[in-house]
Length: 114
Image (cartoon, rainbow, N blue to C red; front, side):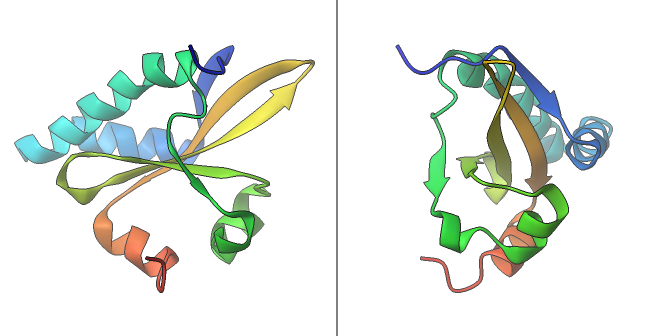
């Protein structure tokens, strides 16, 4: 049993990306959206499920935009990635999905990462 969270919330950017994927004409994009939805229950049960991004490797653009202290990555179909952080509020843990990005965007943010 992992470290649970009270809820999973999406940022505006993550919500927009999910809506776009769900309404896409390509079946592969809809598969990405289904996987994002499926991760909700997984992350509620184990918020440490994803790959940890070391603090010094968190892209500057994300640190500045979201004020991140931690970042986790989940692989999605078609080389998409789900990026999330764990926050605490009033003693409760919450998962905040900050972005769902394609391979090109992820590679740009994490250039030089191996």
